[in-house]
Image 1 (cartoon, rainbow, N blue to C red):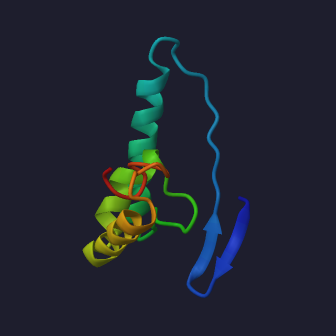
Image 2: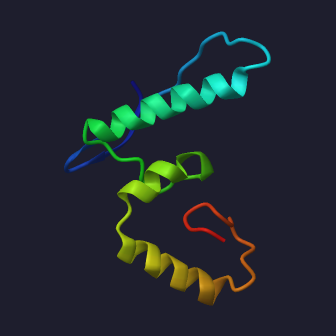
Length: 95
């Protein structure tokens, strides 16, 4: 298991999964695996809010873990620094 960061409360492991899929259903299969893995990670006390790896495909779980005050601060910064909403719309907050 590769570890790229170690923090006082534990390591930040990175995982890759490789498997054959059914053609015509690859996206649905990926989403089911992503949902199960992310739910299990959070249920075990992990976090999906790592400092550089949120992204759109993590957004559902990020919203569940991020405090509302943090979301409000990000919305304010985005409003002031990116008033046209050009930089990563919809990644950390709704556009």
